[in-house]
Length: 110
Image (tube, rainbow, N blue to C red):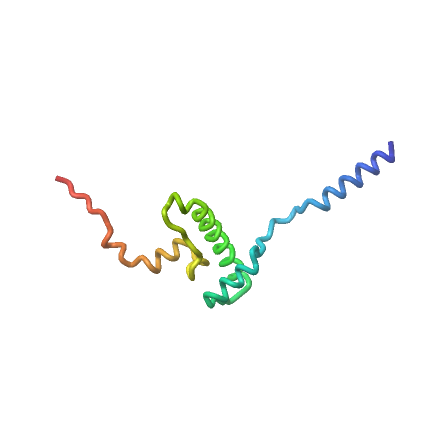
């Protein structure tokens, strides 16, 4: 009986050790591709935190592009990561969509 309790305790400790109770920490993925993209577009970041944030955005954009390109024959065009690859859409719209007023729809009531 004591042997069984000892074995169960050891199994429990082993399982608890392999299970992490800490919050998952974002990590870099596709490191070589990320480094090549940064080099090709002359990207430099002020801190490791900023680079990790930009890398996560880049990964999200990369996944979107890969998903789109898997169905490019349906859409009729393909996409690629350009120098905007580390930017979120809201930032791009706020900076580069300055002609927005010319596309507003005006409703006229009669």
